[in-house]
Image (cartoon, rainbow, N blue to C red; front, top):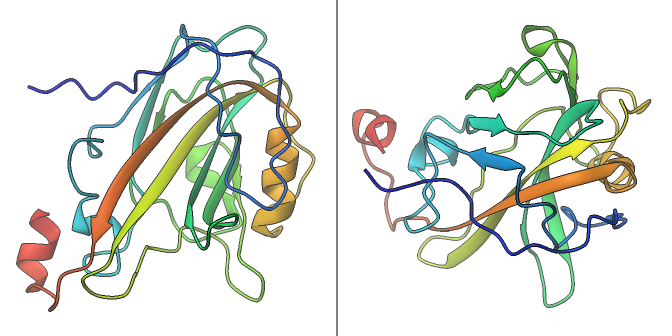
Length: 197
């Protein structure tokens, strides 16, 4: 079985502000490990997590969080232009005793099933994961970044992604990033095929 741990270079643990983007482009101490049973950086983003399939959020597993981690967070984004990223998911205040972030989180500002973790929203949109839905036939790169935070954030669930991302960036102890491509097919598969993807 192909190893799915995210391997990253060691860089400074200094938190980097991420207002207006998905997260720092740096990853922090190597001891922090994040994996996903569903996402393989060497393969396409499974259709299940896009508008072609169920459109649900992907799962992650966190290991060896550095001290003094107070919670976990996730951001997801894609390139909207040469210098801007568009955020389509923010999740924060995942308790440290929850080392598994399950797939298919409900589209709610506060996720009670995940220890009261909070989710952000796009401007004018609803809270929760918004599945990627790029133009057909055009490859896009999507980045999922998982963070260990130095403190629980005071940002309320339902805040905009930019507000949540800035707060996350100011509290980073460590992070790991998944970069994965997705090309929307020229026609959508049947529901059975999409769910298998």
